[in-house]
Image (tube, rainbow, N blue to C red; front, side, top):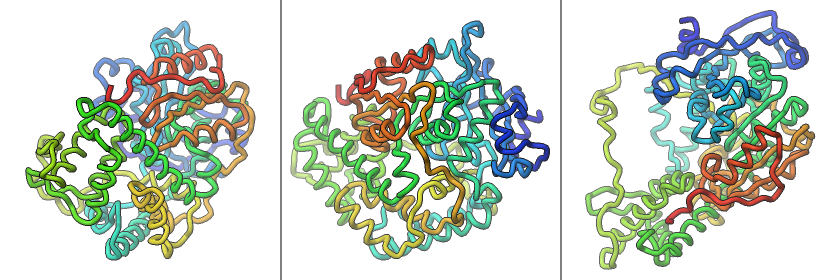
Length: 523
C-alpha cells in the first residue's frame, strides 16, 4: 500500500542523513531497493504473463547530488527477475530514450529486445528517470485547460509570419508556465543528474558494476555514466546513438544535423520504394520527384482527398517523420502518399481513394463528446524540454529564429523547419540558466569496451552520430546494421547474438562488424 501511494503521489520528499555525494557513490550507504507489489495501474500496462513475475520499488535519490543531505526525489523501478537464478550474472538496466521516455515497464517487455539467454541470466530493471512518468513528474501546468490554451497557436511547422509570431509567443508562454509550476526539479534535470541516480540504483540492487542498455537518448545517459563512473561500468550497450560532444556543446548544430538525418532516411526509403516496384510500394515510379512535388504543392495549399479529408503539409511531414522510425509502417505510409498524389493529379492513373485512412479509436473511451470540466487535472509531464533545454546549449533569443528556420529548410526541405520549431525555438526562453551538466570528457576508458550499435538509415540518430560516439568514447566497438528505422535490438538476429555474447561473456564484437536486419522494407 505504501508503495502504491508513493507511485500515485510522485512527490519530492525531503530527507536527511544522506552521505556526501562522493561518499554516496563510493560507500554502501545507499539503502537496498525495497521490492514489493507494483501498483494496479502499472500492472495493467504489462502482459498478463508477466504480472506475477515483476516487482516494483521507489529509490530515493538527492534532487541535487552536490547537496546529498537536502531534498530527495523518488525514482520508480520495475524488476523482472532472471529466469534462472542459479545462472544470474546481475541486473540489466534499460532506458528507452526520449528524453522523457518512461522506461518502467520495459523490463516486462524484455523479449522484444533480448535473447532468451539474456532473460535467463539477468534481472531486467526498467525505470522512469527523475521527473518522468511516475517518478515525481515535472509538470509545467496545473490544469489541462492551461496547457490547451498555450497549445493553441503553437505550430509544429510555422511558415507564415503570423504562424511564426504566434509560435514564438506561445512557446514563451509555455516556458513561463514551467518557471512558475515545475518546482525544485526544474534546475536538476540534466543527464548528469540521471546518471548519478543510475549509480544509486545500481548500488541499491546490489551490483558492483553496471550492466546497461540504452536506446536513442538513452545512449547519452549510458555514455555519461561510463565517463563519470568508468570503473563501475561492466557492460554498456548503446543502440541508436547521439553525438555526445556535439549535443552538449552546440544544440543548434546538433539539431541541424539531425534534420539532415531524416532527409537521408527519407531519400533512401524512396529509392527502395522505386526499386521494389508498384506491386510492393504503391508510391513507386519516380518516388523522389513525386514526393517533392507533393510537398511543394502542400506548402502552397492543402489537398482534399475524395472523402473530403484535408491534408496539410504538417500532416505529411509529421507522419513521414514518425513512420521513418519503423520500417514496418513504410508500406502503409507510401500507400497514403500515393492517395495524396492521386488527389493532386486526378487525371493520372493511380490510387484514387484514401488509403490507410485513420479510424476512430472507440470515441476516446467514450469521452470524445464530453466537455472537459473546469480545472481538469493536468497529467502529462514536461520532461522532454526540461532535459533537452538543460543539456543542449542554444541561443537565448528567438530574434533570428525565422532566418535560421529558412536556412535549415533550404538544405533539408522536408524536415529542416520542422526540426527548428522544436528545441531551437523553445529552449531560447527556458527558465533555467547555467545548469550543472556533464560536458565531458567522453574518452575515459572502461574495463570492457562499450558496444555502439548504429543503423545505416536511422532517421533520428543518424549513422554518423554512431561513428562519432565510438570515436569519442575511450574504449568502444562499433557494430552496424544495414537497416532502416530507429534502433535495432530485437530486429537483427546477428546484432542480437553479438550483444548477447557481450552481455553474458564480455566478449565484445569485432569493431566494424556489419549485420543485416531480420526484414527489409517492401520485401
